[in-house]
Image (tube, rainbow over all chains, first blue to last red):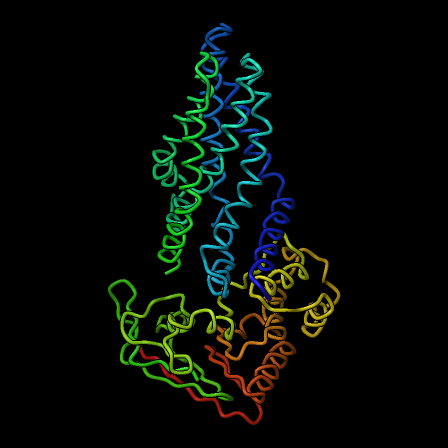
Length: 224
Length: 205
């Protein structure tokens, strides 16, 4: 059997599992909505302030939601022995790791992107800024899954791994946050978002190429 | 042929075993025995490549397993303590997916047949969370029927099985050895496979 078939099987398995556990996916989505909705209650209803903050708030909420979803990435597979079996397949680890991360993004990243415009409207973002918000999340959330996978792999089997993951991963999310929220900001102030979006795209390409190797190394350490 | 040369395993500060040598030829069964904590599982995990030995090397047909990783892993099947059975998938899906992931070619009928052979024919479509411990074990063991691997590495394969399944697994191992396969397993139970004289590797803590 060839490698693509193995990968399609893995992708299908991950998505089937996510469908069977829809609660997990919805929890993350509602967390995202609630965090973003708390800000207007905290800072007051001034439309001008909210419009300025909107992009940044949605981005911070997306960051936190992405982090919350990392626990699912490897922990279940580690506990029930599936991870050992995956490591022992003839398929190179980097390839199936990338496949798992893509599945994770489809399940936990894409819903955030779809929900983001609704939250943007809530903050009174203009139409062009809404588009930029969606586009910046489209480029940025895969990076969150990719970088987060390193943290998830390193903290496998540790007690209190969840808190440790946030300490490891949140600092690494900072560039994504700066350029993601920056893209929305610069659209509102009329500067145009191209520069920020190209940098986000660059980060995505870099993360796509490098993080699977780091994850493979981290999983090796954790499984020993 | 599988060979372990001068193997040593250290976990934390403790040396589990050292200067360990073994060879396993086609048609042979090697039983790893020893008290709890003597390093049986660590040895098996080392042999299948999940653990790097502190010292020594493992050779597959004369080549280091690290150098022929893909060939070795295609020729080997490992069943560990954890059955790698997902609660949210059905028995059929579990076996079907685990075969596909391991690159084993098996049709839907093959998968159903393998589960039927292990007495799970009536619960193909039941989610694994409603299966008993022994039944999960059977789902994992059913993979042996489909995998066309030469080397079986089985960590406590007989745990949680009833008499019928014990018999089934031992027959399966017997057939595998008869057809030129090899098996490495740990167990605390008596293994009796007709026509096969198992060699014993005793680990002392």
